[in-house]
Image (cartoon, rainbow, N blue to C red; front, side, top):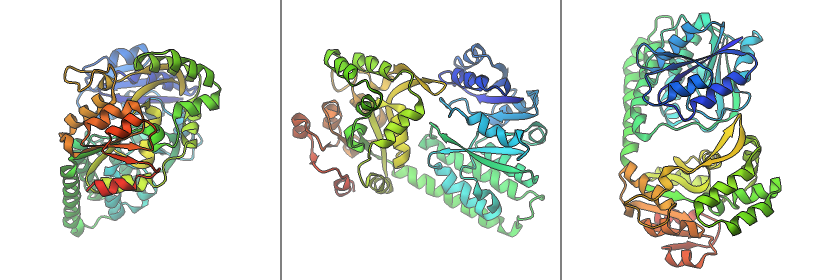
Length: 459
């Protein structure tokens, strides 16, 4: 049998579903949530979902992992992050299978999204110097792992961002059998830009300390000075990158990044076109419209929705343009009235920095028909328009978050619900739009499905 350990800190919105998912797997008979002194309802939600909850004796993810390991009653211990929902259905099965079959002693998950910035800029370059064998792991900083309790209990876990890479290196140094498994598509929160410097330092520090371990025959003490310099240069590169991020470009998704509208394709695929048209003709305000459309997706799995999204073509060359915009110091992302499972998928495909959209709810990877409209869409006392719900409110919240001046922004959309945002941005662009009012107010009208003209504006 398997013990699932979930370290948590202020994850009330997701922990209940994560616990429920873990308990749904037949081979899991123990779920332990190790709480790092959360200030919200995390503990209450975890207990109500059926987990055994213990409070970590000291702060830090490493301490939580260690104490969860020691509290486990099974020989196989599997760690999940508490802020991911939903998990791909077979995550636990895939992580545990090599251990149950005697093929491995330690297993690490990889998932379908681009490796993070710290992974590419810091972890992999340092691993290539001292632990080149570990480059076979596509996501060495992944926190979803499984291992044998007796081996995990011997480790000293770091209390910072270096804990996950530290565990992998320690297992490697002990010559245990290692394996990476692909678990599928995963919605994973990217670290905020402000955290990247701290994360890079702690990951680099862990790798350096492990490299200096006398049990590692690859370590050459004469190279330590060079290694420290590499780490410093990596940190400098990250800090320099952050200092340039004073410009913002926002894309709509449906009929802008995508050559089609997601909900319309779903209506065609799953046969609710008439119901959708009736709702659109009867509904008044956008809140009511959004709440009434979501139930049409009830009972459809996340994988089926992703297949629909993948069947809609993305504008040719969009990824290349996004990459060049980021090179010029732009924060690039999506603001959409579609659903977060789709916008995040598109964001990851194109290498964007963020996506803001409505939050479609799932239970065991199946849509419940419920949707949450995030607060950042709703009008505030300082809102620039009188709409109850507007993308402009989300747009302005980004400017405040990143300290960006409005004149350093670009917004791109195709329809009337983009109008306020396009009028508010420094440069507003109508993209292949048939809306005369939008085209009239836009600073630039792009009539062909290409984003190349952006590169002439975005200096």
